[in-house]
Length: 136
Image (cartoon, rainbow, N blue to C red; front, side, top):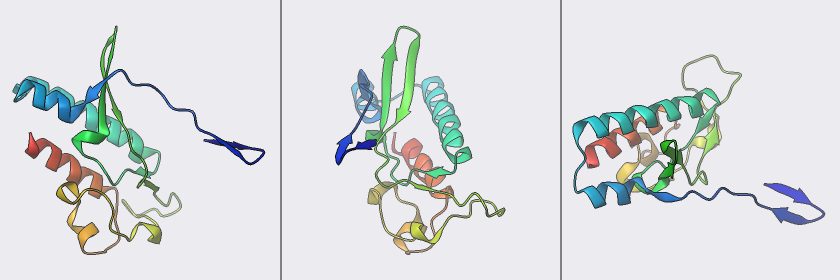
């Protein structure tokens, strides 16, 4: 997003494909090898987000897009409205700033610490990925 002379310009990417939820529903159930491939790919993407100090906090099948391209299917996380950044100055694992103490996300996919109004860490995203795997 860029602001210029009191105007906001939003540039977004068109993703020609479907959500992970629609993909799962269209197939009824996914074979084990496809499930493993999707989860490995998504966890690698999540690792890349966490290495950039980003916590998504609203992971669910509806917020994961499958982009069909000539080179294959690519997965993209969407809906970063609840995302926040980790504190890069703190050297402890998964420490985040206080602004992450709030309930947000979709209840069925939320980590327990979100419900308890405790400090949320990047581990909450891992919990959500587990729920996604369990759900299909």
